[in-house]
Every structure is written in structure tokens, then in C-alpha cells.
Image (cartoon, rainbow, N blue to C red; front, side):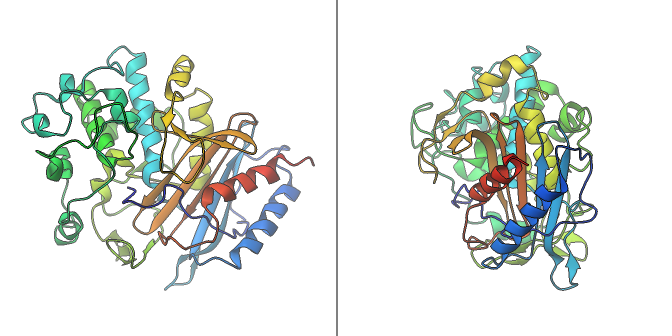
Length: 386
């Protein structure tokens, strides 16, 4: 969920090493590196305003560790733990794209299939902008022509009036029906959650199973991502409190009496998942090293279009992934927003390391530096000669 916010989520500035943080560490992860990360993160915290954060790292050899700082719950004064789960927002689009590429690998779907082949029988689909010319690829890379992200003005009030509501695809996109497209298909990149809602519907049509079932069967279980799960209900085990701000549609704490204020299932294939930062970093490494689908399809995923309007020069967008040049070489990843939470994850192919950070606030001014820049700083520390 982006809601016209900057695509670079705002970073955690200081992260305190958690005693329970490590799992799968090795000699390539010397303690002094963690101490240096601790020092850098502590110095950043001075100028930050977020309750808590976690940082996950996946090293070249596949070992991982995580760090945590601050509070998971400000009222109860509960410390954030490195193994706490937070909403990952649109980072979840990377999972959706991976499932589509599995279906391509299996010959069940083609990227240039007309979306109408799969959704044309739905009574509302022909009323969707550019319905006759959309393809699977143009949904995945946000060149559908729908335009910049907008929301039905009644959407968030409905979330609060009917907090247990289970949303259908039609209900999510209803306010776009019978509206003109802003651009021809394939000509303009414009980030849009609704593209991925349609992709979710395509996945379910192709497989004959709910998306959440395919997510577990195809990715979470075979890759051992045990701390990652779809956000498909109000009660989510291990999810820490999130704090939305006045700039959010639903300000304040997002969890009351152990339940979210509304059903996060509404986010669905646009990014409705929770995870630990450690597993998010591990997922980035698995994904971009060809472990989620046939490695021969990875260049297809990374074949990007210019992403105009983002704060990073020369950025492109592939199939569910931002391709961004950095001082450390190219990076692949995604940022994410959900009311009360922010996330960012990056993989550096030249160095085969991945890093991910999550905050339990969605405040735009939580820190003075974008999360992506912080993750580059983390990567520099990890790559510094011992």
C-alpha cells in the first residue's frame, strides 16, 4: 500500500543488538561487524522519532542475523525483539511476482497473456480501465495505464465501519470501474496497487486455489520461511504494535486487544504480509539468486522500465522489483508501507548480500534519512575489510 507516499520508506536510525537476534551466523559475520553496526545505528537514533525497528542481514555465505532497537509497545514499555513480526507492505509484491514466474515456468501462464483471457468472464472486468489491452506483464511492471494511485474516498471509512469484512477483488477496484484510463497500456510507468489485485485474481484463476494457499505451498513452505505469513486476518501472531500518524488514514495504534483495527486482508496481493526482518533479508537473497523459480527467468524479472517520479535517479522497475544503481553497484528490492508500519529490503548482486529494515511507525518524518540510504550504509559496513 503506497497511498501517494514516497516509495523510499523512512529508515530506522538506531538499532540495538538483540541477544536473541542471531540464527545461522558464521565466521563471515564477526562480532566486531555487529558492534560497528550498533554504533552507527545508535548515532542515527539521536535524530530519529520511531518507537522501534528491526534490521535483518543475509550474508554472502547464506548466514543471517538480526538486530532490534526501541519499543514494540510504547504504552506497555515492551522492547522490540529481533524476531518480532511487522507488516512488510509492498515488499509483498516480490512474492506475487515470484509466483507468477513459477506459473510461467510451468507453462500455465504467459507474461504476454491478455488479462481478459483469465478474468474476461467476470461480470465487472470489462468495465476496468484498459481492460481489453492489459497483459500480465503490464500489471506486474505498473505500465497498465491506470495512472497514479488513488483510493475510493469511502474505502478507509468502510474499513473502520466493517473491520471484519473480507474484501473481494471487485470491491477493491470498484471505484475504478467505468473510469477512463490515463495512459495507453505499456507507455507510462505509474505505481498502482490495483495492478497487483488483478494479478492476484489471475493467480487464483490459473491455479484454482486461494492466493494464500499458493503462497504457502510454492514459496513459504519449500523455502523454510516460517516467520513469514499472509496478513489475512485481524489477529496475527507475533505482530507488534504499529503506530500510524495524523498523515495516515487511520491514525494511532493499529492493534487493540490483540486485534488490528481492521482486516489487513484488504491489502491482499498488493502487499498483505507480515515477516521478521531476518527472513525478509533471507527472502531477498533467495529470490535474486534464483531459488524461488527457474533461474533462467531471473533476467525477465529484472528487465525493467524507467520508473519516473521516484527519488532515485536512473531507477527502473521490473516485475515486482525496483532496480536501483547505488555506490555499491546495482541493487534489487522494494519498499513498503502499511498504516503503522514501514519496510525496505535490498539485495546487492555484486556482493551477494541482502539487508532489510522494518519500523513500527508509518510517520513520514520518522528519521532524517531514507531507509534505502541507511541500508546502503549497512551494506558498506558489512563489506568493509576486517
